[in-house]
Structure formats: structure tokens, C-alpha cells
Image (cartoon, rainbow, N blue to C red):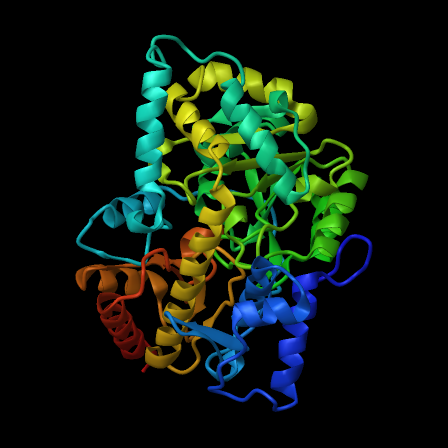
Amino acid sequence: MGKTRSGRETLYHQVAHSIQRQIGQGALQVGDKVPSVRLLSRHHRVSVSTVLQAYFWLEHRGFIEARPRSGFYVRVPYDTLVPEPKYLERKTTPKPVETGSVIQEIIRMLDDPSLVPFGAACPAPELLATNKLNQVLRRAVNRYPAHSANYDFGPGSSLFQRQVARCSLAYGCNFSPEDVVATCGAIEALNLSLRAVAKPNDIIAIESPTYFGVLQAIESLGMRALEVPTFPKEGMCLDELEHAIRKHGVKAVVVMPNCHNPMGYVVSDEKKKAFVELTARHEIPVIEDDVYGDLAFDGRHPTLKSFDRNDLVLLCSSVSKVLGPGFRIGWVHAGRFRAEVERLKFITTIASPSLSQLVIGSFLESGGYERYLRSLRIAFSEQVQSVSKAIAKYFPEGTRITRPRGGYLLWVELPKNVDALRLFHDAIRENISILPGTIFSPSARFKNHIRISCGYPWSERLDRALLTLGRLCQQQAS
């Protein structure tokens, strides 16, 4: 980890380790301001963006913290505040998924603007490039006045496909535009991929915990889920995955290795490569959900797809978490399953929204996307830090929280006698939304876990809400 494919340490890790050594040796102490980005850039003869990557790396390992309009400072070590969730090594067997109406009821409750938004994984509208996208929308309508007069048959608009293919270079791939199949968001990409590689009653290996949308998809298709123990920092346990493949005849694996929902980890490049080699040996298709991949705090990381030499990885993503969920536009690179995905796409929704493809394609073509991402990463990084500190301050002893390396989600383990579903209902009565951990498992595990979204800028309202949540937890814990 922290090295290029040739084995050399990356530039930003060199910069980060130089600051880490100064902290370890006492040259920089708690409360000290670390050198400015520009000063360190000149000193190490690297770019400003490289230094920022180094500082994000240090920040999310608890060495430093950002202070608004002031710079970065050495902080009290993260681990002295609150530990991380424990790794749960439990053996499971394949089982049908039965979410029933629970998830839908919970999601309906979250669709209330009066609630403090810790539940839904949506970024605050004011953080998004709404004004520029509106400008692009107006230009696109003028440029293509008949945009809605015809179906956009085929895998997608050529403009959209070209821009997605161009962006794939950032995460270690080199797509051809015709490899990109446009979808109605990442969830359709995931559903199409499952249908292309498996059939009813087949066994699908999943992370534990996993995004509840994966569970709903598996349930709707009549497949069975097999939970594979998953580390809060490292992702799915490969030994357990290989055991599951050999014992249970797994037909496909669904994973989110970059900025995982709900735990926020980024799997190392070495482990990604080992994962792809393992599944390829057994000819197992892998469905990779990369919807948060652009939001890694220290910059873009390679996908599993970038290590795929057998066309067995189906890479799914969308713009929902970065540019806005209302566009309902995503894509899938389905490898050897492309023809089947295209067929299923046509018989399911015929085509994806033409206008959304034109707007997103034009936005990406106009330039400035990477600069926009940098500002978004900084905002989410600071918001995750603020929420983490408040949880450490207000929640009862025994609470554990993840250290996300990207995105804006926190996975919180509460004391054992706290019932997360009861806490969810208590919080709703206080006009606060959260998600209970049980919906992230087909076996209703994680009864004392919750997911907290940090998609909104820090405010007194959020602070008060976390104080209230801490009080509600304390009432159950005691």
C-alpha cells in the first residue's frame, strides 16, 4: 500500500511520511500548525495537489486535522477518542433474502425534509455543481432541441460513452466508448449485471455489512445471499471468500472496494489484485459497485476492473453521489457479459434518459471535473471529521466508529445492549434520521450498529442532533 505498481513509494506518501516522522519524533506536537501546502510543495518539489493528497492521508489516519481558513494542525490521536468497530468472524450459509417491507418503510420515513439528514446517503445540494450543470442543461437543450423526440437506442449516447471512457483512465482502466452501457443509475447497472451472470436460486457472495440495495436486488431476482466476513479497514476476507466458493458453489460476487457503503474503507491495490486473481481462478464473475469511487479523500484509486485480464469484472457506477441523484444516470462496463447486459437493458427500460446523458456528457467534456472533485473531497473529509468528533464526545462508552477513507458515511457500533431499530424510531420522533444496521445484512446482523451520513456541512443543528442521539443511546445503554 502506498506504492506504485513498480514498487516505488508514491510522491504523496513520501511527503506524508516526512510529516509523520516529525510528529513521531516530537518536532511537531499536538496543536502545532503543520507547514503550509505551498511551503511543503516548494520544499519537496512536488505539486500542490500532491501535498493535499498527503495531508488527506494524514488526516484520515488521525495525525492532523483541517481547520477552516486556517490550515492543518497536529491533532490528538484518533485512536484515543474512540476505537474502530470490531471484525465479526461468523460462519454463514447461503439463504434467500427476505427484506420484506422493512427497508421501504424506513426509506419512506427518510423522505421528509424536516428530519436532520443523517439517514439518506445524499450530498447537500449546496455542495454540488448545480449552477454549472444548469448552464450546461440550457446549452444542451439549445444544441439538441429534439433530444426527447426519439429513443436513444443502443448502449447510450456517443457523447456520454466517450466521456465515461475518458474518465476511466483515472482509475486504471482504458475503456472503449462502445464498452459503456448507459443505465438508469447504478442500481439498474447492478440489477442488469446480476441478471446477466446468475439465475434464480444461485448463490451470490456479498460483503457483511453490505449496501441494502444489493440485498433488495438479490431478493427481487430470487437468488440467495452468502455473507462473507468483512474487515472494517481491509474489506472482504479472501480466505473466507475462497472457502465459500469451494464449499457453496458461488456464482458471482458483489463488492464495493472503493469507499465502501457503509464502512468507508478503500481496499489496497495488492488485495484488489489478489481478489481478481482468486475469482478468475474459479471463473467467478465479480460485480463491482464504484459509485463512491471518485470521492476517496486522497484521490482516485484503481478499481478491481483495472486488474481484470479475463473480462470477468462488471464495473457499475453513476453520477448520483457526485453530481446529483436526480439525473438517474449510470453505466456498466460488463466485460464478456456486455451483449447480455445490452439485451436485458433493452427489454427492461429500452433506453436511458437522453437529456441526462447529454448534460452529464457535456459537463464532463467542458473540463474542470477533477478540480470540482477536489473541493468535494475536502468538504466531505471535513464533515466526516466533525461528525466523528461529536460522536466521540456525546455517545456512550463502548461506541466504535469507522475511519472512512472516502465518501461521507460512518458505520457506528454501539454498546451491545443498544437496539439500533428502536434507536431509529426514537430518533424519528426527535426529527432525526439514521439507518439501523440490520438492513445491511440478510441475516439481520448488526443489531447494535447504525449508519450515519455526513453529506451535509457541519452546523449547530447537526451538533444538537448528535447530542440527542447520544442521549438516546445512553438511555438504552444504561
